[in-house]
Amino acid sequence: MLDDGWMAGGSLLTYESLPEEDQAEDTPLAIDEPTQEELAELETEENIVGEEYLTGYFEEKPELYLVDPQSLLGTKEKQDLQSFLDYHASDSSIDMYIYVFGGDQQIPGDVREEEVVERLYSVGKPAVVAYYYLGAPQRSEIYLSPIITDAVSAAEQRRALKSSVVQAFSSVNLADQLEAFLVQMSIRIYWMERMTEGTAAATKEAIPDGEEARAFHERMEKEEETAALPSWIGLVGGVFVSLCGGLLLVWSSLMWWKHRSRFLFPEFEVEPRMGGSHAAGIGAVISFSSTAVPPARQRDQVPDYMRRA
Amino acid sequence: MFGDGEVKLRSLTDAAGLFRRKERDRIEDAMEAFGTSFPQMFIAVYTGSLGETGNLRQFGFWLLNRGVFEDVDVTKPNEGGVLIVIDPDSKAAGISFGYLLDPFFEERDTFECLSRAHSHWLEGRYCDGLLKVLNHVRTLLRKRSRQVRRDPERYERKVATPVAVEDLVKKIRGGNIHPMYEPLRPESEGVEF
Image 1: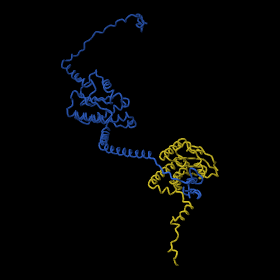
Image 2 (image 1 turned 30 degrees about the vertical axis):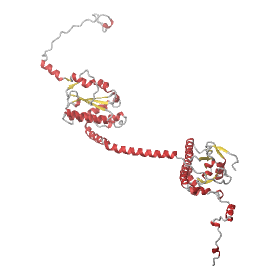
Image 3 (image 1 turned 135 degrees about the horizontal axis):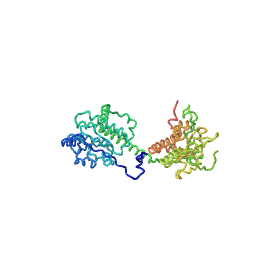
Image 4 (image 1 turned 90 degrees about the vertical axis):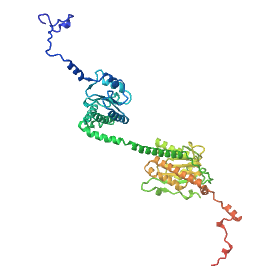
């Protein structure tokens, strides 16, 4: 306690308000106000996606895999990329949606990407959603449908994005960059598929990264070519399966017919022998006491008196 | 030696306890399938020790004549039975069969059937061996059935009652002479040496 009656924490023990402190006088900063030009420049620096496009981007699940309401890509490029994405969708159990933005564009703060993905991609076929910034692949982000988020770790998602970005930088052309990004992402989605099936657990750590991505990309492209063979392999396989099915059917019919067959014998009049009222058919007797001697040598011959006259 | 009365037993009588339950099921299935394929016939299996004095053939003959197989349909008399007897103590097995099979089954056929089981029985695998026997009996009878259809007389002749001697004499006296007993011709009587 001090002499003037103030004590530490005293304000907490009373209902009296704290004594007002002396307000320091505001000292104006000695700098100039921003000019109108500077303010305008500041606004344009933060190039936010126009509101008129937000509906096209985030309102509902897009019909096409390539989402570009701002038409940042040319028609031909768009068609090429779209057809690639269609092919990917037909070949993979995980779809890939690409939202294309300008390289310097910002998504408005009130749009939460996670919320969009959760709202639009929770049901139906699982998907990987990529926000791609034309000319600035390093800004790209990916989001996964909630259904596969657990199966694909965050680290793997980062690796997938990183390697796709590396691939994108292999080209100068903006559309080529996007194409390279998509191809690589498609490959990584293949591994994600495996992970969701639980089969890639062992190889997960072996997935190449960074600089090794190119070699891996080439290898995977070869695998894709192999995967494209089913056009003729499928035909041969189909014929083979049909043939096997036909043979199986024939065999089954034969077995069924055999099983259903009845064999009847004529009943000839046989004179009873040796007082047997029902039977006198004396067959062979063999011994199976020795492994060294063949059955013929272990055969017990029927005595003559038991033979039919 | 084995008794005069009827003996009631099941078609699969495992007195020696050679088969496990699952094996019994497999054997019974095979026996049933045989009975379905050959509606006039049935298979019976007996396993047991006959003792030192027991004769497998005599026992088979006796059992097939005296046995009343409870689980066999009454429309199938013992004439259509094929009895397989296995004596694990003396390590011997034999087959007996009823009169219905007399024309179609011979001793060498039964030996062929039993031979199929020989290697299995040597190793004590009685069930497998027995199934092999049953399978071969089926195969063989199927074959015989086809042969009988083509040439029934051939099999009928096998079991035809032999002509009695007195009948033969009557035939000779009546002028109906069998070529074998035909008297020598007059010209052959005067052969000069």
